[in-house]
Image (cartoon, rainbow, N blue to C red):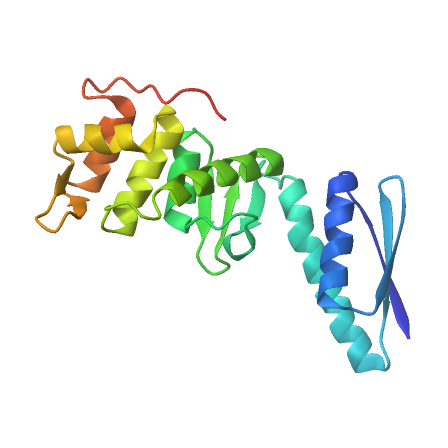
Length: 208
């Protein structure tokens, strides 16, 4: 038994991801494409298996389509459990907002809707992940403190050591007797001042 799903893709990247995901989950289906027109032939041994496979394929296609195509509000949708690079939710949201992108968090689906295109989104995630990796053996005490340092380092294009030194000097962070560096003031105030400057003039640079 089989059913056919016809759709259109935005380009080769979307088509390639669709094929890779369908192959990874091992569904009984075939993908055929011509230009941007795509047909997915879904198979099942019986009616129940066909319906289940069909629904699974539709769900996968919809998830992928929302990453490459804007909705009526001009937003893409990215599921945080499926990010290309492992970056925590708070850091992702704070970074996109600091770059002046719109961000709406969907708690039920653990997804964000935003207007940053996928390629730029993945590039941003990669940069954040690389900066976070630099802090692997740092004395920074908690995730919020690490997020703060990574956020400021990325947005202001400063080395992490320079960000930590500035935050300590301005009293936003403090070093404890055991060497751990912890938050010393309200984290939102720290973000505001380290990103905008003490005079309140916002200067976060261009979108990266």
